[in-house]
Length: 367
Ligand code: NAD
Image 1 (cartoon, rainbow, N blue to C red):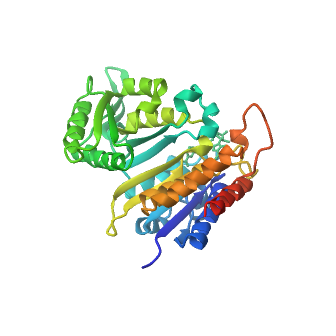
Image 2: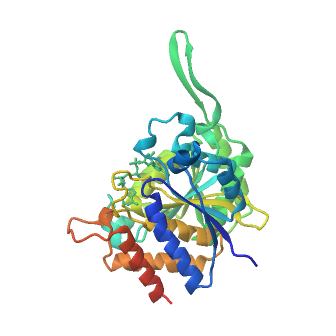
Image 3: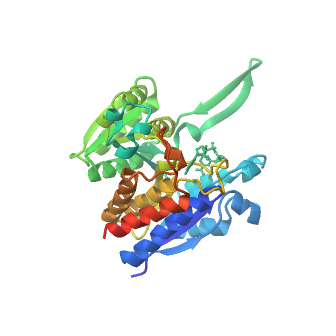
């Protein structure tokens, strides 16, 4: 059987720096765990614009459609800020998400004990936190028509439309229930059924899908209450399923419970391919961090945890994902910190490469 295939798109800024550490980890799995990947690499974002005049070439798009998973670093940077909207680096990312139809965005909010002090909440509220937000990514108010700004009675009117089909709600719900089945079997669906018809439909469809997952405990919550509960008592949640707009806000809110941007991975999943694997792209939540680019300061953990998600969700290697996450937990508990994780007590931060070194050593020690 051939090896699973991975397309690596390091992108811009610190993207290539953090991805270099991920490539070392991928090599480690090939050498030490007999888990080899066919890895190809290509350009996205500003790097693709510099070479091809577009932030994602048709050839790269075609490759992304063929591989088992895409791993992306970050895109953007000041050099590209003044480009026309149609060729901005972010358009490359949006094209990937749209053409691969990646409708389920998975954003874990997991608090490593060693970093509980970084949260803006009290340590006891977040220590051991492990929640997963599933955000519908390809529909809702960011895409609904009509939209625009027009004039009525000499007044400018801004319009956006929240629109969901039951099929769109259902496929995301199935992804969320499947995840809940692999976790603590608790799913909380969030909408505004009290004031929005799309919310009423959302609640109905999620309830209907629940019939196929009777083992999962389903609850419903208005999204504004959800935001409140996330900061009041976040550990009450396991999996949260919500729409594109609420998910955008709630996932950022949940992410910050855990501290640094340099620690946050994400996955975007689509429909299963012929081999049964979902279309998938994995990427850290952070951007290209132009303020620290080229200085060896970037924290590679968000990107490495994104690869751990690929192991779990694309390659059915949950035990190896656990191994990688445990290695990261271990180095943090031992005090390894990049600059973004330095507390008031100070100390000498590790470089990007040094953080890669200690994680690889912890992986070796796990054998
Ligand atoms: P950013 O995430 O790049 O940086 C915000 C702050 O967090 C900066 O101070 C940065 O140094 C720090 N930071 C981020 N990642 C870090 C890491 N791994 N280790 C240590 N520190 C880290 O967000 P921004 O500054 O608003 O945006 C910079 C560029 O990135 C812009 O061009 C923006 O459009 C783009 N961007 C891209 C993505 C993406 O590719 N998915 C996401 C957000 C922003």
